[in-house]
Image (cartoon, rainbow, N blue to C red; front, side, top):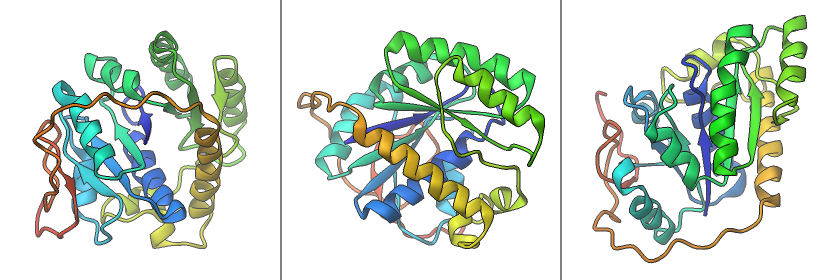
Amino acid sequence: MRIIAVTSQKGGSGKTTITGHLAVQAAKTSGEPVALIDTDPQGSLSDWWNEREDEHPVFAQATLATLDADLHALREAGIRQVFIDTPPAITGAIQAVVQKSDLVIIPTRPSPHDLRAAGRTVDLVERAGKPLVFVVNAATARARLTGEAAIALSQHGTVAPTILHNRQDFAASMIDGRTVMEANPSGKSANEVTTLWSYIEDRIKRLPMKAQFKSVQSPRAGFGNRSQPPGNSIGANQHTHSTGL
């Protein structure tokens, strides 16, 4: 099982949008079970998933205090990839998630403030010895700053060759539980996400296999019927659509 963390200390970087979109694309292209975990107290990813009509990817309830057991339960349930959304701050929560991850994705908007804020996230990931990929997000087409941001980030790690641009369909898709691939499959945004995932997937396949989790007793390996706010116990949820958030 591969664990992909999407993290940044900067709020508004697009973590939740990227987490949801990549997980959906991973489930679609691989045909294998994919799970989402939301560790952000704001619960935006959880809210988005509750609006989805499609049952994939599943949503797994998890707590930071029992993260080892929760991930073990997902592995035992046959989940092949886990995408974790994290809080917009350098906290113990992010440190715990990064330590368990195989790959860390750092979304960054092409602005001086965002570029400066990326430094602490990079330091954390490097201390944990984890591979990272920057994703330039919410870019303006043909803006010189976008190219300059990619060059600046490349001094500190790998930058994904696909840039996600600032388009309304990304924001709209997060309202009704869909992705841009589902809302407008032939659009430019959908093409960017599918191309980005192809690159990320290739990076994941090249990562060395890590040791399996040691056997951990977990009473929460069952499947629930809807997501709850972050911090509740685990259950990789089969989707039964709720009437409210």
